[in-house]
Image (cartoon, rainbow, N blue to C red):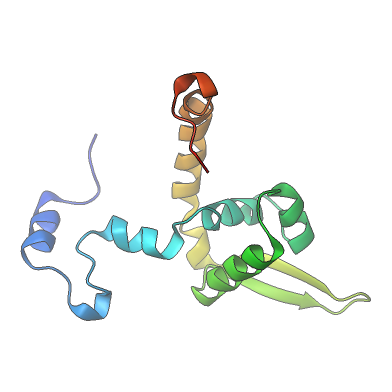
Length: 135
């Protein structure tokens, strides 16, 4: 498989690590995971890109997430510039979330994760596989 990251880039990155202003990350994957990793951020982005744009809808779609955590994750994604929060002037007040152009740039990652999950994750997460996460 051809990687869009050249071997010269990887060599240069490993020999001359980023400056402290970049958080000290030597690997762009580590830096990306620091921003969008965790249990819920990618699930929330996936939900919003698939038309689930209101807090209550997300809460119902993700029964394992608390209101506090969902609120914090939405705020983090908004702070990173990956989603936007819009208050619609209606009675009662309606808040909708949408993905920004920067957030849309994660679409290939979301698609690849979804494709991989459809092909492998359900089989790997069955109790008989011994790979079921402990939580």
